[in-house]
Length: 205
View 1: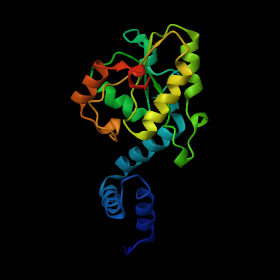
View 2: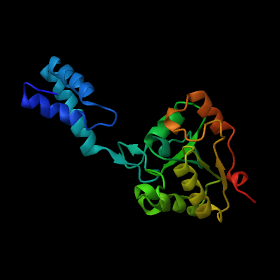
View 3: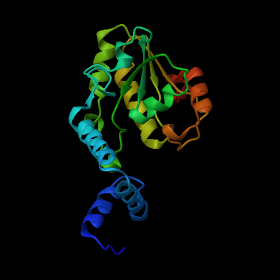
């Protein structure tokens, strides 16, 4: 791709670093910015800088938040005894959109994947174990993607939590194997949460 401006080329290259954004799409985005007013571009830039500088992670569930405790963890309308374990913030948003779940969350920050060099110590697993150990938790729902990495992570967590007096369940397999949770339609995901089953049922006796 030939550019008439080095500044334009630099901007396009930066936008193209985003997942799923090729150079053609990046060029359209940059040209769109050029057509906007200086005020709008400054607002856009400031919002990104502010996001990077001020956003934090909830010290309880690891969800992205504006405060040290997120709105879900501090809500009196949520069932604090019910924890839904997810891979990342996108899964929290997907489940919230179903309006079928009213407990709290725990964001792992990824899945166990030896092929990618991601082990249990790279995820927020110990903080989950500590939440359960502290008491007051009656059920832990494993809402992870139906992939090999997801199943490996669920099995590891089950082994870590099985000795505690809590029910360990997993979402129903209305979701096809290999499916990423964030791409599942809201009705299917909602039903999978509502019809969750004990994880022990998945284990070979």
